Amino acid sequence: MTIAPISYPVRLPIQNSLPKNNAFTSNQAEQGSIFLMPNGNKADKQAAFGEYEQKIAAQNNLVRKHEEAHQSFSGSQALGSPVYETKTDKDGRLIIIGGHQGVTIPQAVDKNAPLSLINQTITAAGFANRGALAPQSFDELSSADKQVAAKSAQILSKAETAKTERLLLQQQFGIDPNQKADPDKLQQMKAQKGQTNPNQQKQTFLGQKLNLIG
Image (cartoon, rainbow, N blue to C red):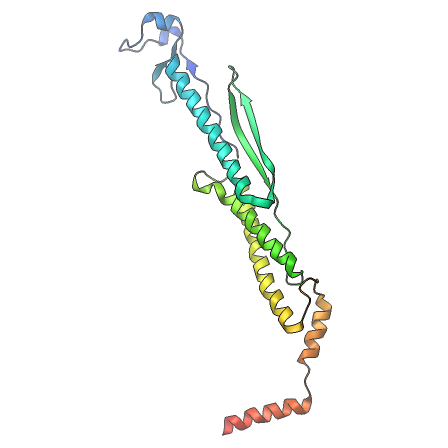
């Protein structure tokens, strides 16, 4: 997460400091206490820096909340704790200007993978996807957030399809759920299962034909 910097209050030159309505005294102007606000208005030092510090606090809180949401919803897929990019202004105030929470995206699997690995991939991809999308309820997602969300959603979808296909293979061919399926052996098993006795095949066909005529 990266955000725009917060501008330090701008002190006006003494000759331009006094508002037309004389809300400030010439003594205040001489002390250089008149500042230009972001909205174009003029304010004294207390008001200008009060607003400035409020913006810093709000930004720091938002960045922390954004990255902590990634960490919390990523579960076991979160890589450690959030890392923040910070700077200090000329008066030593700490400003968080960016953040990052590492998230592990699992490798894609297919129907030949052990059922336990497929289930683990479904769980891991779900965590990664929810973690990437977590801040969207209160903040804009970064391009990196969207990339992780899209990639993890793709892997999750493939893993769910792989599970359906794997369960079917186990039901049809009695494959051990804990073993990786061998594609070549599966092809042989399919071919053997597809072979039938010619006489039995003919009898089945004639029986179907008889039923149709009757």
